[in-house]
Length: 159
Ligand code: MG
Image (cartoon, rainbow, N blue to C red; front, top):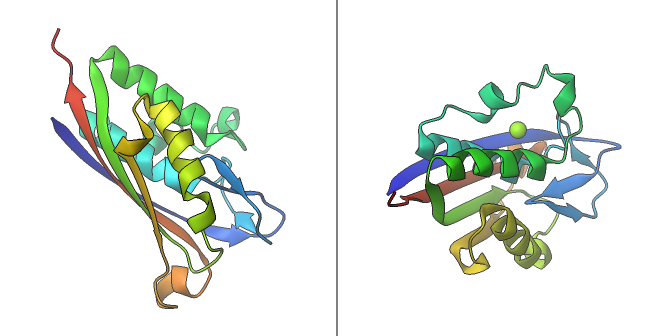
């Protein structure tokens, strides 16, 4: 087995959709980013790439590249999975934590698990998503943005 971890954070910005874990969430602001700003998927991609020993998301999908402007982060996640699958790697499980003071994310957790599991090609039971506030401390607590943390285990398939 191979383990990887990933961390990402983005600032809130007006006139942006809020997309977390591939799910659109109604909110008065979204996250500033070159892509759609899905911090959950970005942290997850970094964890996957980390486990595979393949660097990081910025190396594979540079944010100076116009091709990735406002891109659906699920496309990036699926591309990461294509390269891992080609190397005989499969997701054993993933555990994700989102730090956000607002909005309340509990109603969207199940949808995120379903969505991410589809892209990770594993059962939703193997993709855990948690959300926490930081008790109004730090940049997430002050409502400046959202952070996400991911840990994954990959199985190496017998060839
Ligand atoms: Mg990011």
